[in-house]
Image 1 (cartoon, rainbow, N blue to C red):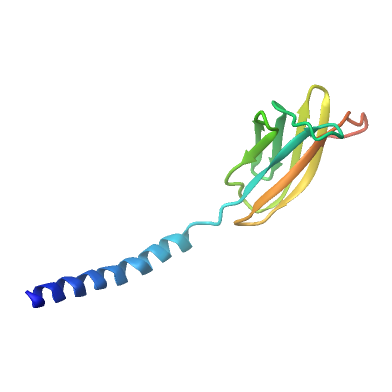
Image 2 (cartoon, rainbow, N blue to C red):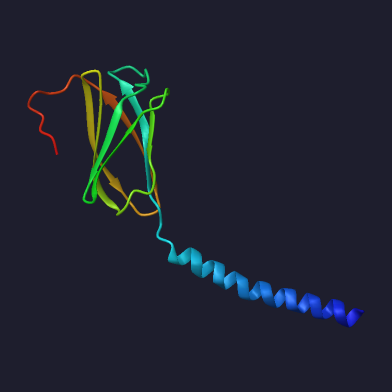
Length: 123
């Protein structure tokens, strides 16, 4: 009986020792994910701009989203790391900002919508 319990314990410990390095290797193989999130506000106020269109321009393309009722937006799994151009618009108002995204980080951004400059150029 003791021999059987000892054998089961040893086999369980051996199995865990083999499983832990495998899990660590799987985690190391996954690239670090980056996220870009923030809020859009209307003008100089802190009123959330619900329904504003937020567009992210990068080397690999363009993606857009709409802010929620609290003016919040989020872009998950932003790849590759680097410099991105972020633009928001709502009811004739506009905001833009360059954003540096590093691997494995969560970047927080606040955009304040204003009347657009007629001399502004698009990316």
